[in-house]
Image 1 (tube, rainbow, N blue to C red):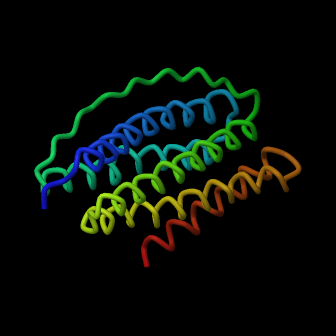
Image 2 (cartoon, helix red, strand yellow):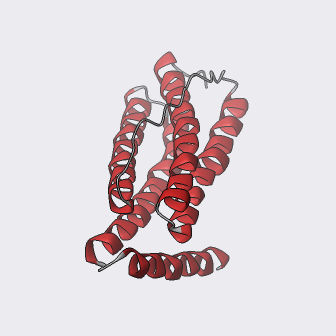
Length: 170
């Protein structure tokens, strides 16, 4: 099926968004570790970065090759956000992931409007993964909301990362 320019454009936009956020989240992971001395928070954020720069990027690249559309890399990274504490950092990431959800919803909407059910089916993976990513970030955010101090939050994140790893291995 020949893809409309609108579908090609939203796929390219999502490809670039993942490259950008993967790079930004990598920087945020350094901030969590270096500035806030929270290595488990840093690992969580770095895992988000790797997800964007790995699985997400690869899926879009493979799909673009399969359907023979060009991908255009057009992104730049300027990490101007300077959090004063880890709670602010996680809140910012949560807000960013909420914007990603809206972006993915628009991508799905465009596919349906264009009658491109094949690409819509492909986009559903990003909808499902976005739900998981958002829920994971919200869980970390809730640790900060309910925790008494960063050490307690860091311990909760450590346990959560172990739980996530066990679930992945199933």
